[in-house]
Length: 333
Image (cartoon, rainbow, N blue to C red; front, side, top):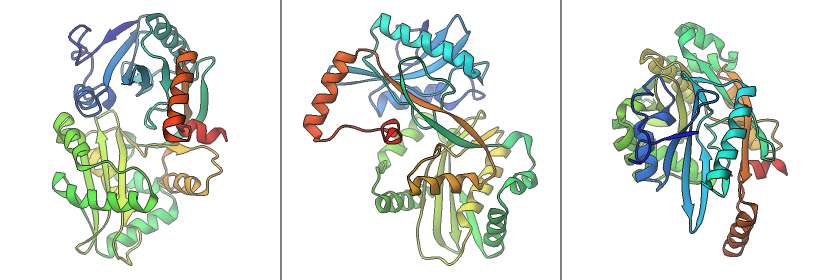
């Protein structure tokens, strides 16, 4: 395999290979964000056998090295089919073992769904709902929604809902996002995280939308995008309002907005498949209502150096009193 990097002068620079037609994870700004804000290196690995590329994040915890796949392998900005992905991952694992590049592949980010799993890996089914913007008119997009969602969008629009886009909506977005993560008891990315996104990706790859009931903000979303796809990575809701359908209208208007910018795909970023968790099933049903196609695949992880990773796991268990868990662990129970 060949190794490319935007940030390591010792590797091949991929700047002339990828464009705004490529996934976000192949962009220079994405690598810079991971390097400068997350203290991680993103390298793009190339399989000469399959003529395909994949972005992989590398980071260290103490003396332990980890790798994380960030997007499925692509050729000419198209994901490899399942059988080819299988071949790619077997080659990728062998390469990392031979070169001793990491001790463990952790699970991909939820926006990195894969179509195959290499032998010996732990995995779980995972999916996402995809709206294909470039093949539908605005009217066809709305009619692809669940009938109740269409009714909600129309109700919100007729009853005074207002949508505002742009970076000047950031403080409102972050307030609603913070309220939502606090209620849910989950991690909240700080303002510095988003400042770094804007610094390295630029406003041309980030869009914020806020829906207002009169002047009361009631919902917000933030997406990262190239023309290849838009990823709905952050959202929030809150505020006193009797207006229903605001968030559904916001997603619809955002689809229209990004479609006009030439974005081909609207990705709602991640749903659990057949989860026993009612809250997660609720998220599944919510995202399904927007009428997109369910893209099914897997998240997988693998220990490259099992003895060393057992030592790491023991250290983490002693320090935090409980094993570190990910989506794969949760779904295996």
